[in-house]
Image (cartoon, rainbow, N blue to C red; front, side):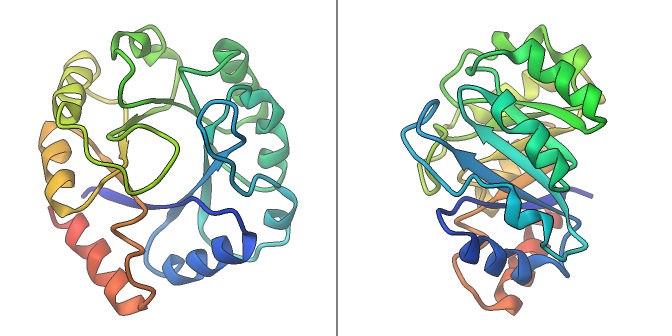
Length: 211
């Protein structure tokens, strides 16, 4: 079954916690997106300290839309995060991978929607998972890039086993396209949180899982 992972991109920890509470009985993982206006033109909440005291059974993963992931990995790992995605478009990619191995956390890479897919090929043997952006990273609600399914298909032909997550514009229509192509994880933000009614969110998650 496809794994659905709610993605949360907020400037305020109160909003982050609110969304975590909405989904913590419905999924196993939640993704926190952070940006510091270095890699993408946006800045979000990026302080690991409140997560240390966050009481939740959810597993936390961090999507690092930042130029220098080494500024964040150790501090967020200490706050309880278990999986990380840094961008191939950022700096210190090899050092970031080594740091994740040292810390004993899952190491993932993310590739932005416009970036040539070949930039990811050299890393596939050294990471646990790959996150493919179906939009241009930085803001939720951007339009789906129609070439995404083909990118997933090409990656799956190269590696039959690696978990492939897709993030951005993941409604049931677009999610179906990338799942057919070989995606195994759907990270959803705007579509999932379009309502703050827990029953609506549960229905949306189940709809995505059943594709």
